[in-house]
Length: 445
Image 1 (tube, rainbow, N blue to C red):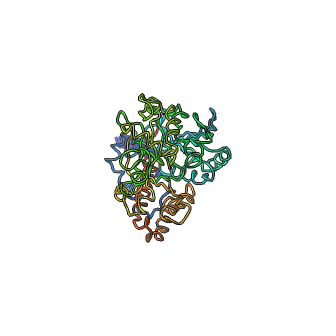
Image 2: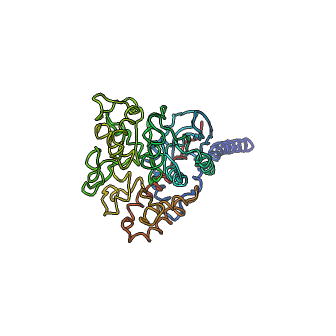
Image 3: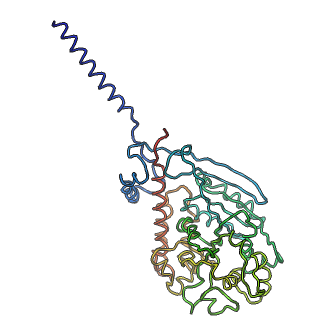
């Protein structure tokens, strides 16, 4: 009997041991949580890392449909290069980096934003700095359409190819020659500044592009281009382009005091930042002062120039003002902080939007990036120009920018530093948050 009891006890103990081993083993096999990779953009002491972490609460994860105890994994990035058409094209394409399931389970065509710039003469470095600023903060991919004189083509290719792969994966670009479809090319080329009139012909040349943002070479993005791109959704059914007013105060505005031709609204508009729905422009007949019937965009340009060429001062910008004077229902105007120029601060601060929200797009016209007339503008340009890609954004861009701004506080435009710095800091915060959140997704099944 004793032997029988011992056998039963041993069998029971062995059964319990197997059960413990089975359940304990399965638990041990669960993969541990993997931390997000060390951040190269923000220092641990900046406080932003804790700020973002505090937002990744259980509720936030639920809203993103992310299981709370799944390992963090990373999505591979693909590169594709192409060459085609008459333009010299270099393209980089990246996979969708958003939060979600693996690409095989969830695919979505990524929207690409289009940005055009015209560069002639000594505008190479200035243009590359503009492109750099657009890439620093933007979220969606960007296709750059660069119109340049022949000697600059190889220099652009060389400059863009030297950037890190992590950056070149975020954009595509095409380089086009300077061309004018109607009228005398040499005459157009010399209108106001070298090649500036090229922007008038973008709807004619870029026939396969639906919407486009044009900027001058002396423009810097201090927040994601995505935010400017979203103005396209604000257009009503008749609007096909968007620009900012030339001035906020009519009594000191140039057009309201000196223009010898029709212009838009009370103060005119500035064309250094111009958002366009090219499809609508190509399909619209524009009212004008020359004939009673409307003219297409391409048919309108040359006769309009011939009529007003002895009365315009600012070249292509004046022609755009004349067009939208007669077609005011076609223009959407965005606030001054989206095209912030020295005129907004050198006569006293007169851009309320910039005072409240900070500058979104900085436009350094009058050559202020390259002289000492407005040091606040030059400080921002130099900081972005000298910033090495992939370095810590706060340590290598924002902190030096803050420090150098101390030398400008006694100048006309530098006396309100937060106007220039507010959106830069906010944009860096956004970059960091997306860098953390976008890597979070469930593992493949």
